[in-house]
Image 1 (cartoon, rainbow, N blue to C red):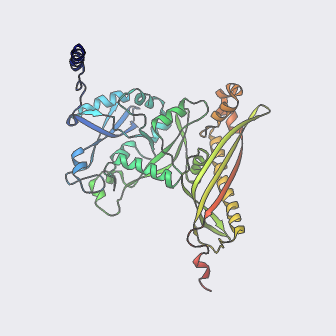
Image 2 (cartoon, rainbow, N blue to C red):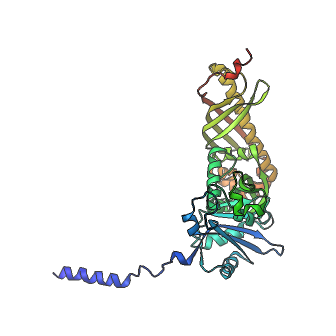
Image 3 (spheres, rainbow, N blue to C red):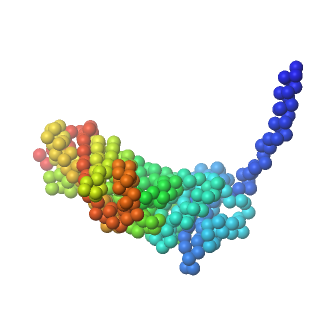
Length: 406
């Protein structure tokens, strides 16, 4: 009986001490931020652009893209400040609800800001805010303002921020020239002694004024659309160059982030006659020391299928497949070497070669780390070995076009 009363007493004390709703936040009092764009004005002050979700339009709309029957799925407003904290607080003068950043999935930094000032101080603000998630995606607005990116309405996906995230994931999985990067990834690279970050660029194709109008979504072919474009190369927190096309894919090869891509090779003097679909890839990077100098070894193993053959080729012949694999090895190796040479010219180790040296020779690394990017990395000897295998040739071994005209 005494035990029963003790349990009851403890339960009553617990009820009085626990306040389950002391920090409650009603949805009707919050402005849900989906994306945050950052620009610089003419005076060098920050211009923050907030993409705010309109829950009623998102829930009630049956139309694809950015809007519903009553309006767009998002509203966008901009404010100016000397720092991001001031930008956020000053935005409260333009909106009736408390800004809520827990759902902010995309940070868009303008190319101008990334080149002129860099991203170090910007990331500090996000890292300190307990409400902001460091898993938010980070992109660079290439050739335009971040405000234009945040204001652009998108087809299919109602919320533009979601469109950017899905596009990054899709292109990383299917195309292989872009990387899905979040704030945490970039901060790790920035604080590392042997690796610089790369961030995917987002470009607005079309008229920015048209992109923010609902009419842009009410046609079968929008006049303005968001698109991924290139990899931004950073050094000491500042954007210094852009890698595009095969050079960008060379970076992705080395970083072991190729999930699927299409490698085209020439055949019988016909350009890009055979398409090779990569289905599996593994890259390993190792470092060794020789005569006090570091050397890098890159080993790539790729497996894939023949996706298209626009030239006469007998895919039942093992000898022919060996020749195709040989050409593939050469093409992939060229992409990797081109990316390495371009990074060395920029004196920016975006591959993490310095980290590999640190792991294999920590004592020697202590002597090199301060001058790694400017002295050792540009002259680094890199050996590239590629293995490429054709696993399947599709439903047809011989192109049907081989019989045309016979």
